[in-house]
Length: 277
View 1 (cartoon, rainbow, N blue to C red):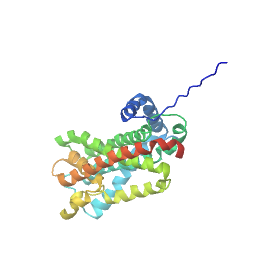
View 2 (view 1 turned 90 degrees about the vertical axis):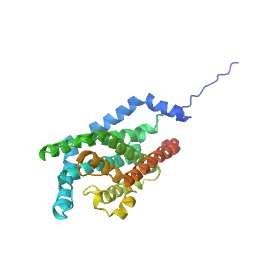
View 3 (view 1 turned 30 degrees about the vertical axis):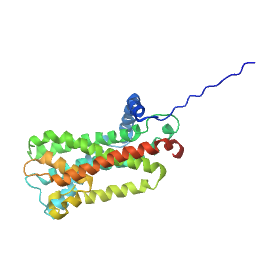
View 4 (view 1 turned 135 degrees about the vertical axis):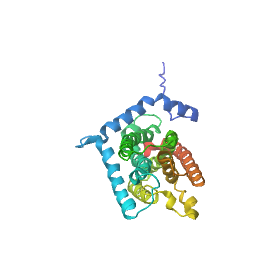
């Protein structure tokens, strides 16, 4: 009498860190698919489609220019006020959109997560890429404003990719925290819009951070987006625009810690997503 032995194949989510990062590369096609799918459906069944990526930041820029530039008469240095506002609007909108998309990314892909194994880090990362596409499209408005005001940037514009990378890291770090927390605590679907709205008011989007009193500048830079926005303006505006190095260093350091802790926490709770979601 022969006994039949059955073998079970258990797929584990990256038993070692090295295996996990290799899996990220192995599943790169899934990353492309998720990002491309979200890009295609983002403005599906809207009358003007992807033009919303231009209209929203443009109208916000107009409002901020009127309120802070015309009514409050805040200084803008040698640059036209609309360009100063939009140079801050670009990284902020990228960050805000990434938070919103990442926080719901795992919930939106619950069916996929509960059925097959793949590195879950792919899901929020693809959401950040979708927000980055909006960021690139919105950049056309900045080019249009420069042409309208005959504004020519200085050599500092060559450093802009560095600050874009910093903005990407800030978006990824915050997005990983919110994506992981939202799986277990669905309250974050209500908290994230408040964070985005409140963050807009405490970040130097509609004004230059130079108006903050010197004694408060370092404390103000505890908000990581202060350093990111100041970096963008330093690169784009040139001229009299200066970078407050102590505050910038603090913002970037906090952003790096946020990114590393976000990856650590996401990896820590990743195995529970399929059960909780």
